[in-house]
Image (cartoon, rainbow, N blue to C red; front, side):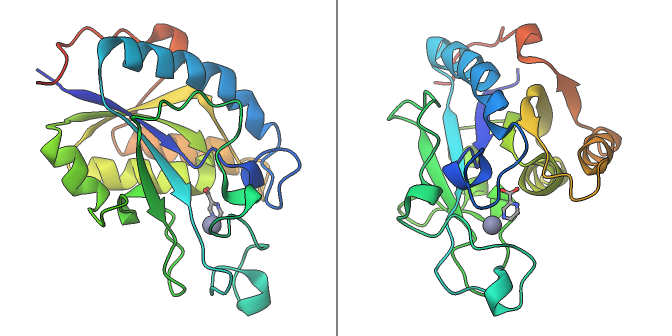
Length: 200
Ligand code: VGL
Ligand code: ZN
């Protein structure tokens, strides 16, 4: 028996149209993700959301020698979850990239409000299968999926619930292929069939 959880990666204002590191049509993931959120909520399955949560000064940012424009600075509007995302208040929030010396692409680099790492949170919930969607396909979604697979989780990537930065036009497609190669299953939200018993 698999125990499923939904992991929504970095659906934050700065990655959506109008944000400082906007993913083209980043907000198109919101409809499908809300449908997935509804299903998980209805079943009583755990819902987790990661957020990129950088200090104002970090090697992750261009002004300090890093690759990215300033984005998702802690407590700013750009770091807030997109308004349209129906995150229940019971969702576990995992913050990552909080350390000025690391990029924190994977949600498994993140911790909840009490400092518990994501892997430990999932272990305590007895989760064995992660459904992953969010932003961006070619960075944080990919890193999260690959770490989950490495840690032994089954992973389902929500095809219509992800969007890519695409610094190169095919980065998103390549990332998806890499995730599948590593063992992830890719399916659209409409095909989710959550048949398991809810976790005790
Ligand atoms: C991300 C670039 C920089 C992401 C985060 O969430 O995919 N990408 N920081
Ligand atoms: Zn970042």
